[in-house]
Each structure stands twice: as structure tokens, then as C-alpha cells.
Image 1 (cartoon, rainbow, N blue to C red):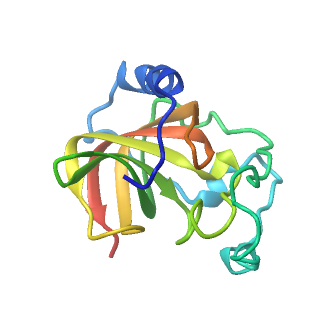
Image 2 (cartoon, rainbow, N blue to C red):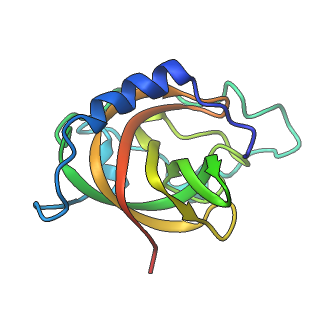
Length: 167
């Protein structure tokens, strides 16, 4: 575990809504990009610019930019999104809950992106990761879910049906 504890109240509420009506993967899957998760007209700094900070400076805690909101367009839809794994919970050697982040270093080495650029992924089948920030593509039921961890506030949740190494 990376030292992140999930607020169990927020974790349960957000994922309880997600797990109720899980669609089968045979339905149409929507391919999302990180830009799709931003409210229309919002722009975020590219990862190259987000990392320009003093690593010896103050803690990253409390430096997460405010989110301008989340999009509800895909609530309850089966989606596919690629990103990097930041493990939160394990079962044996497999990850059962993780933050899917848009770039390497998010939430650890640089300030976290806004909540609308973070996705809490849960899976019933533990996923074996190669290490911190493994690149993956996750497919499953998607929705908005306000969740807090010690690392960052998260705006979305994804109940994973399929997790694959990004290729």
C-alpha cells in the first residue's frame, strides 16, 4: 500500500451506486480519454508542465487544484480508459483498488490533478501489477463518485470488468 487510506464512507457510497446495475461487456463500450472527463471548455496543463515543481519543497498534500466539476454523460455506461495504476488496496499480491491517473507521478511526486482527472478503480479479481504506475487499460461500469484518500480527492469511479496492461 502506498500510504493512502480510502475514506470508507465515500468509498462505499460511490461504489455502491456503481455496482448496482453493472452492464455486460457485450454491450457497447465507450472509449474515453482524460480530456473527455473534463467539463466542456475546461483545459488542464499537460503533464510536462505539471511536473515543474520543487521536489524538495513543501508537501504535495493540500496542493490539489480545485475541480470545476465532473461529467455525468457516461454514468452507468461501460467504458474503456487507459492510465497509470496508483495502488490503494491489495488482496495478496494483487491490487483490488487503485487510483487510475493520467500521467506517471500524479499524486506522489507532483501535486495531484483535479478530482475530475482521477478515477477510483475497484475489481473483484485482484490485478497483479509490476510496480507503481503500471500502464493499464480498464474496462467496466463508470460513474461519478466523490471519494477522498490521503493523497487526493477523486471525482469518478470505475468498477472493473477487465484490466489489461497498456500496449
